[in-house]
Image (tube, rainbow, N blue to C red; front, side):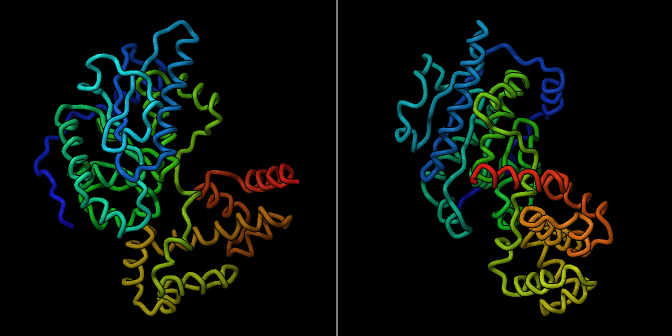
Amino acid sequence: MRWTRREGVDKLPVQAASWRATVETGSGPTTMKNVEIFAVESGFPSSIVLTIDILAAANRLRVAEDRPPPFDYWLAGPAADRFAGLAPARRDGAQSSPDIVIVPGIGLFNPKAVEEGLERSSASDARRRLLLAHEEGKEIAASCTGVFLLASAGILDGRRATTAWWLAAYFSKLFPNVVLDREAMVVTDGHLTTAGAAMAQVDLVLTLVARHASPMLADACSRYLLMDARRSQTSFISLDFLTAGDERLRRARAWAEARLGEEFTVDELAGIAGMSPRTFARRLAATTGLSPVRFLQRLRAERAIALLETTRLPVDEIAHRVGYADASTLRRVLRRHGGDSPRAFRDAAMAAFERVD
């Protein structure tokens, strides 16, 4: 890596407590916020358009109540011209003083592409712009691979953050000083807010609407645009994807999947991978962010969800098939994995089948 990071960037006072108070009480600031949507090369078009759509919806809903719109927003950055005409006319002077800078996800899908993308001159320009905004005390929000831009500028050092689940291990390797929450959908630390994979841009912008306008307005936007609130990336994480590039872990995963209903130990699993238990645990954590126990829990949860969605087997029988003594244990694991009960998973699958039918 050849990009440079600014050392010793001052940390700003943590404002998370006041933002939580805003969300809990439902009272929001009444002053209009200037929002700069920073469009970088190869950025996800959908993330940029969704940002505009949500902010526009927030404004329309407020105006419909005979109240002033909460946001003035515009596009900036090297790719702004690609989306010309989508953002409203800028107010005089607004461009020079954003209150919030939003960085949608960048279309980089693997570590090699991320490395190359961060070394481009446009990425260096973006880091300078973000550092300036950071030093001026602006709020900065980014999702998916856009979070890599913030981290590569040193802005996230010592802060909590999240990013796309499928790049989390690589992110932690590059930026060990960032406290990464691999499963969270949105993380706020002071004036910095980060979100998960590309479509978490929705959750990111709704969080900003709730904070700077009101939670009720954010809820109204989500209903108006048919966007569900999501608290975690957990249910979207695929162990098959995360272990695909590691032959030893892939072999261990396949062996375990074939024996989920049987008793076996972590030491046996490590042996299948050709590693000591300690090395296996380190390798698994670096690749998936999971301990061996959580790894097996996720494998069992994934199999249980598949059985719930494709069979009518009783929940007790499914629990036994994936290695749990009773349905209550399975229910606890499923809530941790995806937040739903066995019945909710089965009902959702049936509803989807009936729509297709």
